[in-house]
Length: 456
Ligand SMILES: Cc1ncc(COP(=O)(O)O)c(C=O)c1O
Image (cartoon, rainbow, N blue to C red):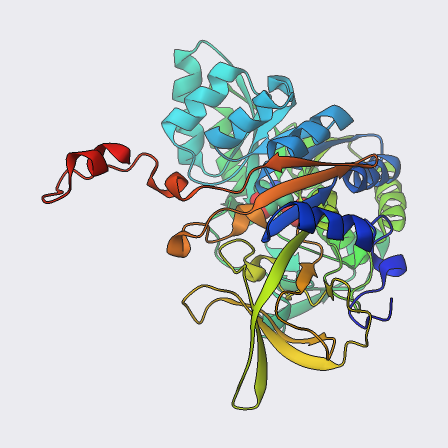
């Protein structure tokens, strides 16, 4: 295919054929998410093959909590990283067992903590000493001793995360020699954060947490980077986590478990390179071999596991020009695929059935009545694109469906379809308008007919 946005061979080693994608889009109405479960297997196998054997791989449900996808990852042998009771239920429903589940994230309520303790999940990551105290009181009530990690906001982070790429340089940067790997990696001072405890105060707070009788402090959790494509950057960040853990052990606080969070990136356009997981794994192994302490490790992977396995399909409903710029208006929008979650925006798109050169620069706009609903700016499409064409946006399996403004303007939720071993199956029906009225009441309604009131 002659397509300047897409190099199928280079960037997506296992991708459905255009015919398969077309068939799915013809079977279901657009907008639509389509997932390739075989691609998820492939990603998991890479992680399992290349990460050192002391790593337990968790799937981060917030990336995509569709039950079919969760079930696939449970079957493959992943544990689960959850951040709510909803995700806990989704994990248990799809075959993850309680001892494989880790609870992360800020703002855990007493109800959430109590449910997690009662369920017997393996680890809760505490974000503050106050949270640890609340958890301790609840664990005491249940007569349990809960294993915990503390989340740390490190003094420095590397600066290649796509989240902060645009601001790098304005944050006051330092060069470090990257510790034992000798990598020259630029780091920036971390900002004040709602996540975790500041590194400078970690020891003081560890002492406070160690004094709590119903908690068992196993180790630390640090996650600062997102969508990192240069493996050396992520390695430097993880090496920093190991150094922090070593210093905690040097001071006599025995910790044996490290949780590195996620951060392994995926390409979102043809100039992005693939994350070199093989070199990453090898260098990580070398670091552990030379480290004075032995650790069990956890990774919580979302984007790398499912991002490339999903695409979003939408139809062109209008084509227009404004002040010399061309707009393609789609039947989808940011209520179903919030492009910000994939910064820098993916230009990784294809117009089905159009084999011409991608030489026309356009902006893709969604159907929402807000200027926020611009899906991709300055993207190339074929000259002969027309109303009714189906457009595919690739690499949206992570933070797509789950990360969007789903309630804006009350458009139906998109359907979801999965492909596995030659078969395509509907895994979520298109939402119904009634879904938006679920659990709502109209106690102040004055002039509505009785039947209308009872119908919601
Ligand atoms: C605590 C935590 N762990 C893991 C992840 C997953 O990160 P990624 O999608 O980069 O693998 C996230 C994502 O936000 C997270 O908040």
